[in-house]
Length: 386
Picture 1 (tube, rainbow, N blue to C red):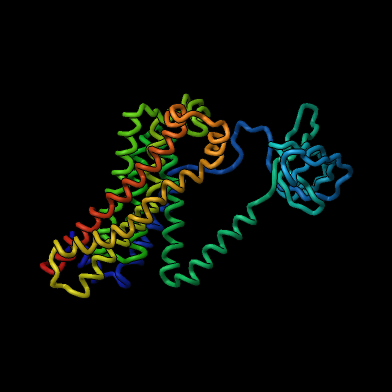
Picture 2: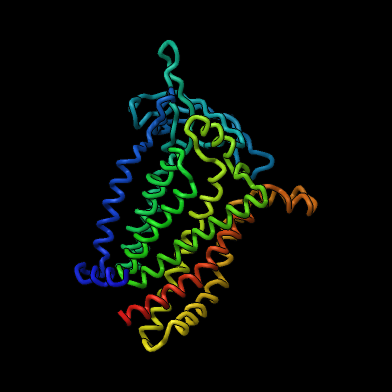
């Protein structure tokens, strides 16, 4: 394997990055074409979602919500001109009912989203759908990429390419595989392996350091998935306690989604980013030490990698715990407000699920350190021998 990598470097400029990028582009094209996914209105929908500009507010009957600061509730009567879709240019009168859970405050000149459906007799029914946020989202993404490229320079460009590739693989490969009834865990592991290989080699080049990092990362996320699956079975966590599980069960009756495995597949994907950071950090440190003193043997290089890894573990072990806690902050607040006794709290399905996700992912991060340190030390010393 090492000799193949070394030979590949001789024929490909810039440490093979552009070959990897080309392969990644081809994979992305094939994956998108094969997925058949489109994000248009579903055939069963009898309405269109279109953009509309608020021309005027004819009347509004609003009052301040007594419990939620800054929220208005009541009704608005709007004149709206549709600015996209088949109804572009048409002007409709729209009643906007604002409650606590459906609250979209319209202002003159705003671009908002509306549903338009044709009822019996050819009459149009137009209702408020929500705020139009895609422009802001695109601007935020552009800002992120711009900052990444300005600060990261060439590595920033590689990072942008790898990030786009990762999004494509998740959306157009992993999700279609799950929808098709294949194992979500297997789909997540394959996704992790593909994205890891492309990301690491794009950013760090085609070399034995990247090979060591990829091996450690893939084994680390696989360990996280295996531990979460085993813990779920021991604790009798079915995976049906997660958000939207009931909707997934309903949908899976026709398309065969393996809903119980989704929880554990999610652990693999959620831990991938943090594990990737740890893996490349350890591999880089080992090869950096070896470049300074190439007389170091396998044992000493492994110890150097572990010394760095222990420092990384000190901070990274909190990463996933905090991430899962942050995503479940509302749930945690509700639990505290109800003042549940400890015996009920520790045995709640939601608490068990969050603990399994966070701890299994963190164990995957920790195990990545010795695995990557050994692989990097072994490949570095073998490189000299070869």
